[in-house]
Length: 465
Ligand code: BGP
Picture 1 (cartoon, rainbow, N blue to C red):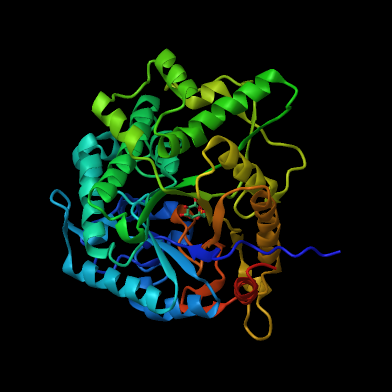
Picture 2: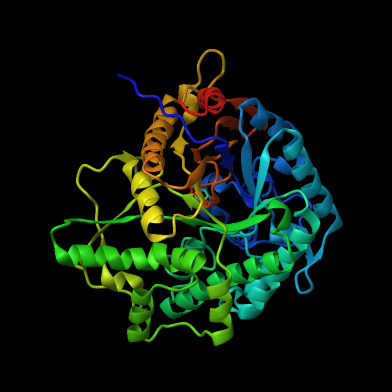
């Protein structure tokens, strides 16, 4: 018998993108680390497609938002680019053209009956701040970010009620300071841990400004977006595997989740970092800011689980790395998305829901990204020109079924956003894998609703499937 999956009242059905991945860099006043990286190493990016045009949202936001309405979305996340909004990075003064653009986007979103959710940082540090101060290594940069946030609140918080500070902050640590998949590709465990601390501090300082200036009156809420990758041990009966998974979890999930929700860093993390001599520099005053400025709601990006086993290899790096404590484990028979190279494991969504319910105060949260990137979707275009992406519909259904089970068991989840509404630029993968409900023809910028776009419309109308 087919079961129906109906979701709570006022559930958010939506989709997320980010400024640097959809707007194009038209009229920006500063370069982000990605703009700069593309300039110096274009060959790193798939087919050498860079961030200049992406999905042209800067010019086509009206038509794009109308399409989001057409597929029934009731909420939409994007980000304001620091490198666009802020003319003077030291003072936080805004740029006129950017003010007009973001005002138009916000007003148009609301006009279409869609709730705007605005994020402030999506890996897009202004490169000048890296060159001058070392980027997130610097507490001065933390304070400049707070100024940027304050400018954004002043300009737009009258209409934007849901704000988030960072998207996947652990990726800044991993990509820029450990595993070299984001510029400046530094490998330095000690710096990585300082950055982990500084970004947590930046988030809490922004929460503090939001609340102390009263932007939380009138329904305003502030949260953060974390990519949670639950760590599953190779063998749950092997205590060393289980311990390795616990440590991986503390590094990659709890290091942001715990400060954001509970106001403190996990004890296990601090213990390890002290023992290794790589603990960050902090002050009492800063730790109090983190303690007292926790988030109102959480966004969870979920794509794949982490599988872990006890350390078997020796760490080759001369640098201290978290990987000293675990090895990643390739589980035989795991189900893969071969294009992105990520395991597909829908049950993790249920496990996340229960973890938040039981260990994180059952804080209100939503799935802020979930999706399946597929290469070569032209293969699935039918005679009417529509991409028949049944695999994506199945992927969403399976994840939603697990989410539904979590909600039935008391998880406080209020929405589900997919990645992404319209095929967008995926960092170094550029336009290799497509995720959207709406296909983008890169050459003509023509946008066409896929089969999944029709499907999500029905889902939002029924509040389930
Ligand atoms: C998340 C990011 C997004 C997006 C997505 C898909 O980690 O928040 O920005 O890009 O992953 O991943 P990718 O683009 O690497 O395929």
